[in-house]
Amino acid sequence: MKYRTLVSAEQIEARLAEMGAEITADYAGQDLLLIAVLKGAFMTLADLARHIEVPLDMDFMAVSSYGDATKSSGVVRILKDLDTEISGRHVLIVEDIVDSGLTLSYLRRNLEVRGPASLEIATLLLKPGLQKVPLDVKYIGFEIPPDFVIGYGLDYYGQYRNLPYVAVLEEE
Ligand code: 5GP
Image (tube, rainbow, N blue to C red; front, side, top):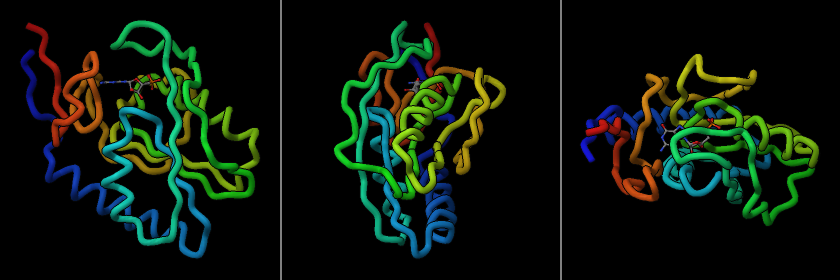
């Protein structure tokens, strides 16, 4: 497979530092819980969390979207739920990418009914204009073109998650 760099490791690091500073300011004095959706968001969570300077907890969910590997169907199955109660807590969902927004919209509704004190979304990448549902994303790393990307947690059939940068897959 051929691919080319879209967002470099240096750009990611610099932007996550900025986002971390913003989140640190916004959540000062609050009880913050970061929730990452496995598997794609693990790298964003790990690197973003190192730039957040308020005490925080982390928890993980795993979901699977029915349909093929490169398109979201919006039908989401929870494979692993949170270990933590989120009632009354300030929750920040950390995502790798928002494409159609269907997965996040489902998750948001699912978490909302558990009664968090607040619920916001941070994503490293967002493909503007492709959202099929209105979605309020508070922290956005980079807006990118509507191409399929890999790296920095994002896979293509399970591979390429380890790339330290985000790349565009080029079909041969
Ligand atoms: P959405 O529901 O917003 O369309 O996207 C759901 C999930 O599809 C994302 O969390 C991500 O796992 C996957 N996804 C969406 N766009 C891309 C992409 O460009 N590359 C990869 N590897 N996964 C994507």
